[in-house]
Length: 260
Image 1 (cartoon, rainbow, N blue to C red):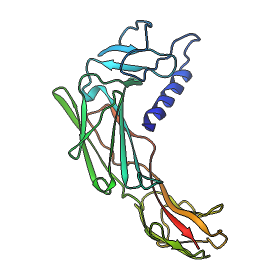
Image 2 (image 1 turned 90 degrees about the horizontal axis):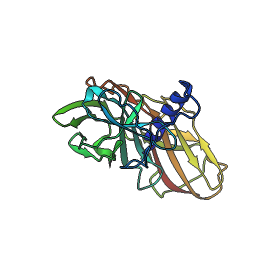
Image 3 (image 1 turned 60 degrees about the vertical axis):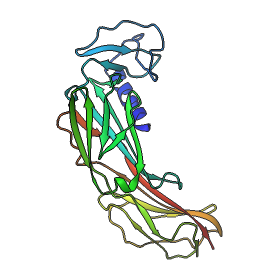
Image 4 (image 1 turned 30 degrees about the vertical axis):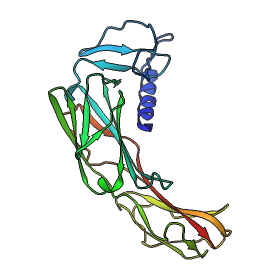
């Protein structure tokens, strides 16, 4: 749920910059129930409560959670740096209303390409095999009571290291080659790690494939090879919402090797 903390930080900075007077409470809530008695704010249009806490931007519960009341933000994390995560894509979706994180309490839900996206009160988070998303158009539907709206985006290809193979014994060389698959539209880099050394490529959107790394100075022993990319969902589209925004998406893939 890292995207939620990123949006919390952004909103907190916005509140500070806007000139909150000393002693003005800034709201935070991270559970299903308010943390205790607090001020009784005057609800904004369409809201029922603002849940106050010790610090951070406010959460709001709305009477009307139809798409036109909401600004959508989302991010994708494709793959990872271990065997458990490298073939998994995580999609994290949240909503704001007039700068406040929306806390859902009336059965609002999302499905994407037929998969139900679990909800956690203030965000929706789905982890699924990357093969279900990689390179595909993703169509998601948000449901609120009798209203619904879609948002769509194209998922980049999940990165993969094709050669060397997982757990291979790889000879140290000034021209050690790595072949891979990745979406070429965004900058990426390939990195090799030894017991106490590393070698990496420049970060660029177009690079040779296979790419060459100099591992001649590596010590023998356990190591890894990884590919990493930051990307944006340039075609994220949801016209029924107030706005849609992509936040902090990235892709990674790593294999373990032994340097000989």
